[in-house]
Length: 371
Image 1 (spheres, rainbow, N blue to C red):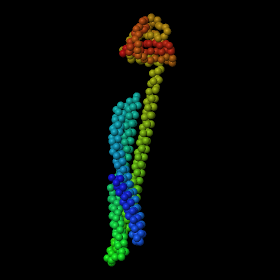
Image 2: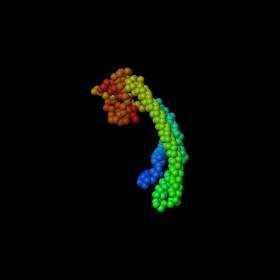
Image 3: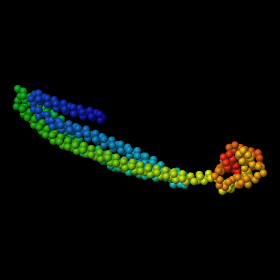
Image 4: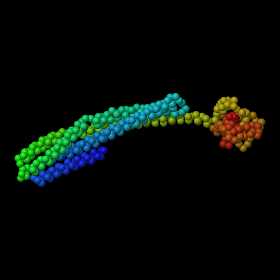
């Protein structure tokens, strides 16, 4: 439909130019008054055609901006609902499951709080886009000022068609009055046609000036307001993205700090568990006394212990108190072992044993706890 309108407008312009050219040639050829063709009026008509196309294109741009912003607002509202629900769930988890041993609850709470702030910024952006962009442009699209200017242009076009028809009538009357058989009646009709043409030209000239001024005012208003609304939209988006970037930077810093703090809290515990200590052995043995099997020991090296040695005395003699060359650890049995001599343990798959490594090739097994 829009293509048809454009083609019709181009055809009207071409027809008008051809009519003016034909009248000019016709007048010059037959010696008629060349003042019948008004060059100023032709320029005014071309100016109005240009203004009409410019204001129509600006109106279409305004309509496209309004439609695009409205679609953006609709999608953003749906996204806000989703993100707000996510933020609430993260805050709920962070508040309900706070633990000094894990960083996830704190990070989840910070994540939810930060995204709630970001959605408030998005809400402000949507409000600005609706109030400062859509509403002013929509008011201009449906406003009466553009329609009034276009109505003047339509009146101008109709008067212009009447002027063209009257010009053709005057030329015809002039030709007829120059015939040999011309009468006084022909001269009177010629004068009447010329007077009517002059009246129509005066009306057309005044209407052309009025329509041109109105269309130029509308064009200037469209250009100014549309640019201002685009600038306001860019300012709002810029402020929104800057605020969101600042919130995300703070969130990232908080999460990294929480991670580092959690790692620093866990590191001393790991170091302490690697240091051998007689006290740790005694506490572990006491807490698991209900599950202990017989207190025997296995010496894992190239020689074995004597069968008459007391396991407890051997254990106390072999465990150094604070030797840096010893390490103890808890191990799970993956291969069964049947005791062959006194001082050895019967081991089953799944049992847990405490092993003391004195040297690189010497290990001692002190007690066993069955699963």
